[in-house]
Length: 206
Image 1 (cartoon, one colour):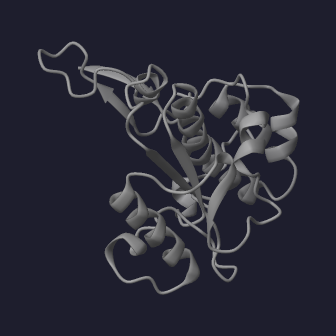
Image 2: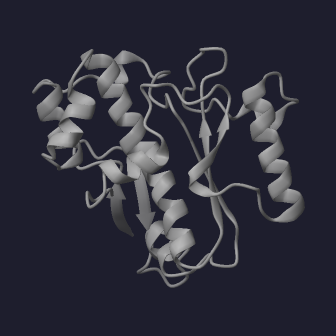
């Protein structure tokens, strides 16, 4: 079995186990490579991520690196780009570190997936899971809408999008420039997906 890229450079965290050397491979390549090559051109892709993905994790599971916030950003992402250091290195260290984790591990790959699908000639939309009445949109905040009747605006938006995708094979959204927002409008401390793509342009993400 081939172990492919992980969440980051260090620590690597969860990742994708490629089995391209198997007789009957199930995951023969990185999913983004498959999408970029047009492997899902005829399938509508709906990608989503929550704006506060790392907020619900226990502090012990997302500690600020012992080397400090700025060095941690460099070790985690492999970049010394000053714009990225300014975006995530200035302010409350715990909040900024969690913001980096949310953007780099979850939101950036989702936005890049949508752009790759559209560049390959397919259709895709991006869904930002935002806060609801100020409550953080942590990892899995959209899950209740998939398994029970919606109880708030965030869950209703998710449910409508998923049902439309099931019924029609697509949803009505314009890539990452005008994404769906499930819940409150995007908080001022959260980069819209289009700005996220610009900030991280050229920086590889495993």
